[in-house]
Image 1: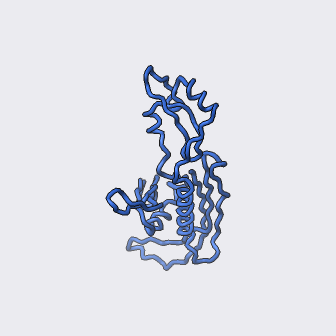
Image 2: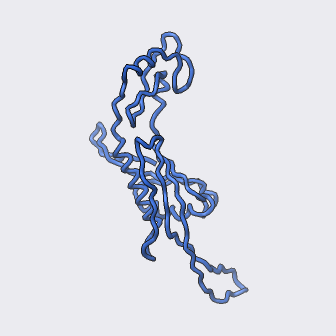
Image 3: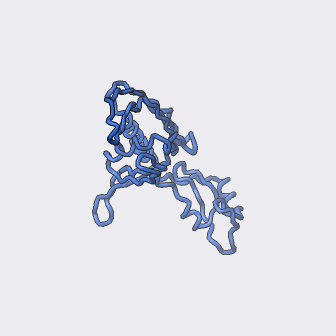
Length: 209
């Protein structure tokens, strides 16, 4: 899934006291606070998953619009996981059977099947649709991603520092690639989606970045 964010800012101007020229000083004259955001979740197939653009504007002056954004995006990611955590059974009709039998090349790597090489049926785990014949190794490596990419407008230029402290407030590690103290090229956040019990009876988290 792909998300896009555009964050606007309100701006306030502050008066400052006369600085002492004999000492180093910083004179803040503006305070930028987020006032609204929007994002759109794009699926590889709108028939599989689609949602209207999310648009939120600050209702009260003390609304934490960044935290609202983080909470809503995490909720959507958890919703997507819940809808698709169970793999769909493959749909394999007569045409699919014929195409599989006649296939001479792997639909994933585009290389031919060697004599005696195992040929397997590859299907989409989200829709159940048969995608084509494949090498067994290609099919095993052709997995659904365990992360949700999020594309920000102007992330490295300005907005990234707004999110780091808010992301720390929810469970899950954060991994950042920083340009400097206030600019981040990219960052990832672990989101706890579910829980499961392993073969030893230990409860563990299902995590996605």
